Amino acid sequence: MGKQETVKAINAASAAFKSWSKTSAKHRHDLLLKLYRELVANVDDLAYIIVAENGKSLAEAKGEVNYSNSFIEWFAEEAQRTYGHTVPASLPGARNVIVKQPIGVAGLITPWNFPAAMITRKVGPALAAGCTVVVKAPAETPFSALAFCQLAEKVGFPKGVINVITCAKGPNEAAVGKELCENGIVKKISFTGSTRVGKILMQQSASTLKKLSFELGGNSPFIVFGDADVDKAVEGALACKFRGSGQTCVCANRIYVHEDVYEEFSSKLAQRVEQFQVGYGMVEGVTHGPLVSQAGLEKVEEHVNKSVANGAKVLVGGKRGEGLFFEPTVLSDMSKGSPIEFEETFGPLAGLYKFSSEEDVIRIANDVPVGLAGYFFSQDVSRCFRVAEELQVGMVGINTGILSQAVVPFGGVKESGFGREGGKAGIDEYMKKLLAVRSSLEDS
Ligand code: SIN
Image 1: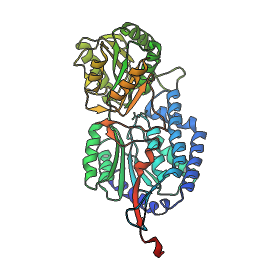
Image 2: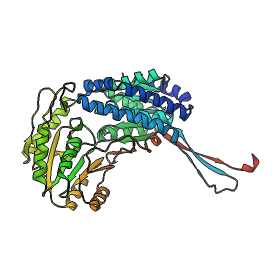
Image 3: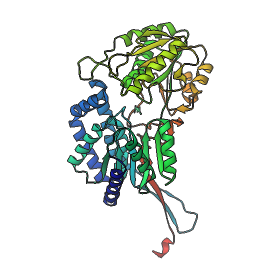
Image 4: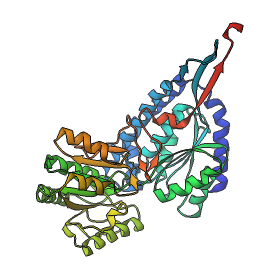
């Protein structure tokens, strides 16, 4: 599809908004819960679709479907909690009431790394708020979005409330995004993707001054202090660095390990990574899948080669496999100037730096233009609070490598974007606030 179909979808969403926005919060809650139950009943099929289109292992795909479904469950409940408030009036006999209303048609642009969860994290709050949506499904992974629609239609979502545009990579993809950003009927854009594309969409959206929420690229630091439980830190690094074969915005990108535990951490991490089984996600025992594209594969290879040329040692992996597979890789002795300091690898490469002081490691961790997630391991309670507050990121994992959940706000600072998805804040992104002042109560 292209621009023309996008206009059609926007018009359909606009027509449906008239009645959908007037439904009661209870009605939207009930329908979303019905959808949640239908999604849960189809976990296996939804997971197979993710394996087929994205390549992650079946266990990871099931994990994603559960994560994805949790957004529909959470926002079904939140539909009934979009409380406004009242404010004492400065005029005698008047009342100030602030109510929240759905913002209108929302344009949702989602990435391929979580073909299901990034759809529900946006569609869930939008529908709960009373908005209708036009989703631009990722070119690489459109099928989860279509399966979601099929189930939504089955449980009774009216026509026009959820619209999906699928398009191939290339000019149509850019045209669809541009239309969503520039069309005046669309009142909100939520985008998950790269900082580079985010900047383009923000410029395009300026023409109609849309409300925006952007979850963009990161370059997450992962810090292991000398007082850390090293085994826990290894588990955290495995989960955080290699989730989706390293293709998540919140994956650890730069791993800093204190000199006192460097040898122990690096050898234990390498031993565990060596046990990974890379292959087709439906095969029993496979833990990690391929990269999503040739460009993604070449970037990982370039990061490995440049780091090695810069003095890093290969502890495990380091080479391409067949097709789009790359061996899960651990590099030690990383030195300043390696590419992972400047950009996300978005692949299965763990590069380990040695550090000696807390002050230095925080300065280095913060010395990037982005700030999505950060992680550290320490058993010192004062350090836990101190470092969490010093890191310039939107989300901090302390003694854990996984922080994403439907019930908490997800999002970044600096060039990692703005706005929050999930949690209490997630639904507000799809609402506007109306101040209704009522005066002269005596006259009524
Ligand atoms: C992302 O990579 O964009 C999302 C990751 C998550 O939700 O945990």
